[in-house]
Amino acid sequence: MSSERTEVQVRPGVESDLDALTDIYNHYVRETPITFDTATFTPVERRPWLLSHPEDGPHRLMVATAGDSQRILGYATSSAFRPKPAYETSVEVTIYLAPDAGGRGVGTLLYKALFAALADEDLHRAYAGIAQPNEASVRLHERFGFRHVGTYREVGRKFGRYWDVAWYEKEL
Image 1 (cartoon, rainbow, N blue to C red):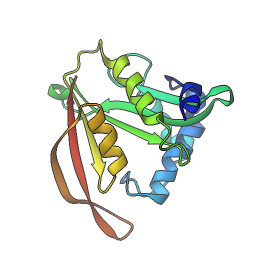
Image 2: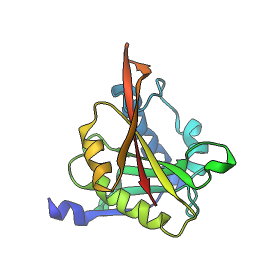
Image 3: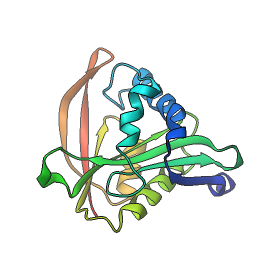
Image 4: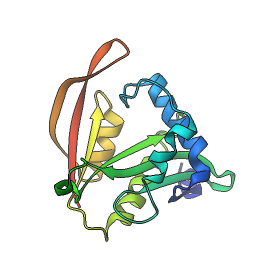
């Protein structure tokens, strides 16, 4: 397992990653309640999302690639928490992994790189909403110092049922 981790590289996301990032996200749209989007996206539709995460500033996109192949294993983002100006020092963070990339430490590497990149930004808190149940995501966030601050009960409906979202926060 450790050799797999050393082969993983994390870097800022770039426009040429868009097709692979869209494919990863669409897997979660189609197959899971992890995102509450219910219709898949084309890369053209996802382009504004990618462009809203520049290489500097508080809203970042970090991509994990597999060694020499450069196959994208997943990505992490920090995005605006809410649009109003008083929320500028808060970000919402998230991770999406390729379906075969879980359990290999990729999420840990992504969050390490993301939080290192954000260390010099004027940020106060990071928030993560985790559709329940998702024990792997809860463990990852708690490992990075997030604490549970509340749960929205049955806040989203997907696949014919309602889902809770647990909210976590981390001081930056």
